[in-house]
Length: 155
Image 1 (cartoon, rainbow, N blue to C red):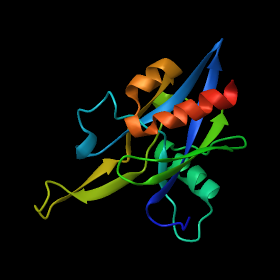
Image 2: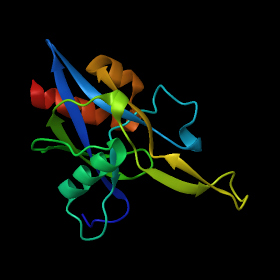
Image 3: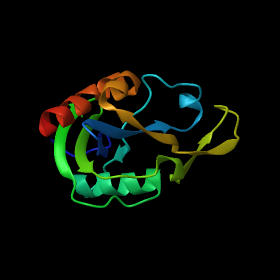
Image 4: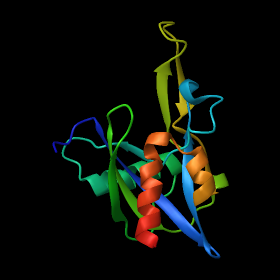
């Protein structure tokens, strides 16, 4: 498959909490996602730039969106196709992170549309840890297969 702007890469960070597995998901920032919660959370991910290795993109996006470089070796998890047609290469990484302490990069966009005014927004509004069961209720429906792949890999 050719690497184009329609390919994203991201990392599903997970940790063990006793017998349970918890995953870190992010809620995107910006006006489109304002007020959304259930079904809007996702893994930190972003577009693969031309000539960029997919794993390098996943690491870069994690750092840009959460403000910290992930520690450890990421492992290929799965490739999914989101509802909008974008392919997502997902990697898994066991680790921990203080979800309250994230520092996201920002993006600028015309807001309101066609107003000529530009505003800056954090790329990530917030991050949180979820049990796999709760994550299934909160994650973007087209990213559910990422959780399935993690569960299968850890079984």
